[in-house]
Image 1 (tube, rainbow, N blue to C red):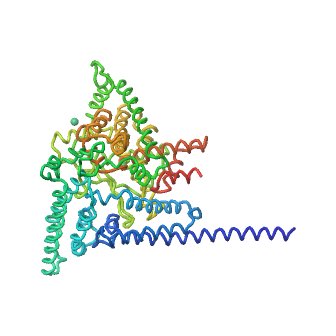
Image 2: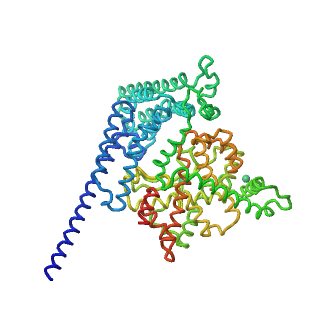
Image 3: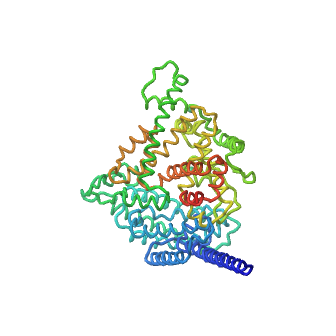
Length: 614
Ligand code: ZN
Ligand code: ZN
C-alpha cells in the first residue's frame, strides 16, 4: 500500500512539473515574441513609435511603397505563425490578454490590407505634420539634436508623398478636403515654425557654425514644401476642382467648409467621381469588431443606444416638469422638448467667470477624491498627484480638457490635466462656451477626465505595466470607464441628487448615446443618413447647438466606429457590473468590483469579462 501511495505521489508530482514546465515554456516563448513584436512594429511604423515617445526612429517616416508593403506582409505572416505556436490557455491571465490583443491587431491589419483599404481612399492619412511637429516640439533632446533628426526626415518627404499619390485610387470627398486643408497647414509649419527653429539654433549656444549644413537644411525644407504642394495640387486638380462642366459644382468649397457638400454620394448615387465616405454595413460591422472588441455586435449596441435615448428623454421630460417653477416661475409650461430646452437654458446660466475656469477645475479635484474615498468607491493612490495646468499651446484647439500621461517610454513623468484657456474667445463666444461647461457640466467633465475617470483608470493600469496593453490599448474600455464613472458617481450621491445636475447629466450623456446612433445611421445600409437627418437628430433630439452639431457631422463623415466606442464601453461595463452582482450575491461590493475590473489594465471589456466571470 505504501508503495502504491508513493507511486501516486510521484506520478502526481511528475504531472505538476510537466505542467508547470509547459506553462513556463509558453510564457518564455511569449515574452520573447512580444519583445520582437514591439521592436519590429516600431521598425515598420516609425511615426507610431514617435507618437508613443520612443525616439529611436525620429529621423524616419513610414513610406507606403512596395518595400513597406512587402515588409508589412512578412511582419503579419511571421507573428501569425509565432502566435499559433503558443497555446494561449497556458499563459497567466494578464498575458492571455496581451496574446489576444496582438492576435486582434494582426487580424485587423490583414483586414485593412485586404478589405478596408483605407490607404487607397483616405488622402488625409498622408501628412508628415504629426511626425515633424513631435520632433520639433519635443522636449526630450536639445534643439540641435532634434533638428539633426529632422534633417534626415525631411529628405524622405518627397518619397513619402510620391508613395501616397501612387497608392490612392478613388478618395472620398470629405477626406480629400480634409487632406488639402491639413496639408496646407503642414506647408505653413515647414515654412515658418521649422525655419524659425533653424534660425533659433543658429543664435543659440549650441550652435557650432556649420553654414553648409544650414544651406543644405534650407534646401531640404524647400523640396519638402514642394512635395506637399504637389500633393495638394494633385488632390485639387484631379478630384476637387470642377472639370469642364463635369461635376461642375463639386470643387467650389475645396479646402473649406468640409461637409457642406460631402453628401453628394447619398444613397449610392453613381454619378460621383468620389467614393462614398459611408463605408456600408459589412465593413462597418467588421470595423466595429476590430476597433471596439466588444462582446456585442454593432447592431446590439445600436439598439441599446436607441433604448437609452428613449429613457433619457423620459427622464428629461420629468425633471423639466419638476424644475419648471423654479426657473420659469409663473410661466405657462410648454410641451416636452421645448420645455426641456428652456429649463436647460436657464440652468446653464450658472457658470464660472471666464478668468477662473482653471481654478474651478483645480478646486474640484480634491472634492472628487474625498467623495470617492469616503464612499469607498475605489482606493486612490495619494502618491500620484494630478497636475492641473493650462493646455500647452501646441496641443490646443482639440478639446476643452484632456489628460496627458507619460507614455510607455517616459514613465516617471507627471500626469497632467490640461485645461484649455479661453482668453482668445470674444465675449459672446466665451459666454456660449461657459454655458456649455456650466457649473453642473464642469463637475461631470472632471469626473470623466480625472477622478475617478481617465486619470484614476490610468493610475490603476500603470500598476501592472504592459507595453502591449499600452500600445494596443482599447479605446472602448478607456472611454467606457470614464462614461461609466460619471453615472456611477451621481448614483452614489455625488452632488446630493440635485435635479439640475441630473438634467445636465442627461444632456451630457445623451451626446454619447446619439454619437453611437449617428455613427451607425450614417454608415449602415438602410439608413445612410444625410447631413439634414444628422443635424435634426443632434439638434432636435439631443439639444445640441448648430455649431456643435455641424462639427459632429463632420467628424462622423471622417471617422467610422470611433464615435461608438464611448457608449459601447459604458454599456459593456454597466452590464458586466450587473452580471458580477448576480454572481456575487450578498457579497457584492462596489469597490471590489471596480478594483478587480481596473486591475486588468486598458484591455477590452470582453477579455476582462471572460477572466472575471471564469
Ligand atoms: Zn453667463
Ligand atoms: Zn474621455
